[in-house]
Length: 301
Ligand code: GUN
Image (cartoon, rainbow, N blue to C red; front, side, top):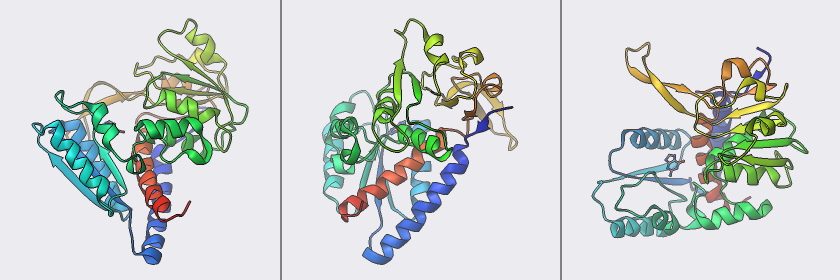
């Protein structure tokens, strides 16, 4: 193995400790803690486990955490009214509506109803626009791209002038991370190419990348010969390719990334594992956004 592993699990611990210390400081000075509400509609098992982890993490770092579970039958109007209630609640700094929502509810309408200054997911068009403008305008970068950038910074990878290739053009990962990496400033200032299913020479583009960010959702899409020796490879893929029984005798999913890890680690300079790479960073950055939301309100940067 030649590549250095960038472990999301370790970086998560460092950041959560930093957040906990800052929350304690703000509490002592202002008598306030960040408040996060997660709204869960229905009983989708994956959504329940994500939301539970978000709430547990919020509790761990000293936030006020509210888990608001609603039946799958809730009407769109009632959900919008609930969001309005939290928009007006001074003790709440972050509102997260867990996706996906049931079919009878218009997801776009719901996300657009969240106060952009409490939109800690960074999905509201106002925050997408702020991200595009960059610099001081940015309030809440979306959590997965923010986690990716933080991993690159903390691993000490040079981004200024680097050739960054992003595989995938989703609104949640591909488009925002590409946008973030072209901005001036720390962990950015790169030359970015986005490749996607319409790209003619996927391999050719990937081979040029100093930093290769892969968010395609296709297991083992990136072959070792597509990787430039010494490149930084960020694998955002979380593909369920089967099931196994773990040490506790419980059935768990077998996860695979979008990059052929075992081969790629012999060529890359840095690489993120799956699981334990980008995954743990998303919830961590949600906590950071919620803390930032309170800090903005208190007039702190
Ligand atoms: N469902 C899966 N991932 C996410 C996320 O990051 N935010 C929200 N709101 N829902 C999700």
